[in-house]
Amino acid sequence: MADMKVVTPGPNGQVKEVPTEPTFNENDPKAMELEEKTQAFQEKLAKKKYRVKTTKETLDYLMTTFYENVNWSGYECYAISETHKELTKVTDKFATKEFTNDKRSFTLKVEVLEALFHFVKSHTGKGLESAKSHRLLCEDLSVPMAEMNTDRNELREMAMEAEAAKHGITVEDYKKAADAMHAQQNRPVQPGM
Image: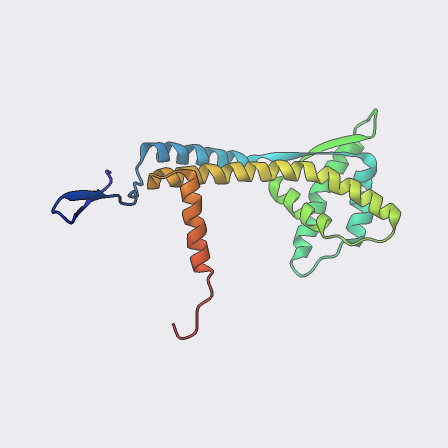
């Protein structure tokens, strides 16, 4: 689809072109290719598991002290019981292995990692020893969480690039337009208008 040209008569009868905004093209080849790549990456991320590297001591703290004292409300009980169930599978596997060191490594599905991190980051403890153990757990979970956030940011950027291509504009211009639209939608309504 080509951009539409608008002409305006000048003061002496001459005609000058007035720039118009780019038009939307759902079938833009570049946009379609980017959408396919975005979809493939999204499917890959849906199946991806994130690696947690920790120690036996930190894992023991998580499975005992943390889960015994974690605060939850309402339906959060499902997240607590499901994350505990998944981590119990991990610790049960570890119980059948012989280790030559204190290091432990395992993978978690994104929803389990997110739920676990939600409770770990908002956990309230008491005492220095508990704080030290909890700090190690936070540090160990921050690495896969950072990886997951990087993956999501990449997916978001890919989707924006495809949308910008459909509109025939740069990603930066697309972001500006989206920000302006959100600002307009979030603007308080003036009384009497």
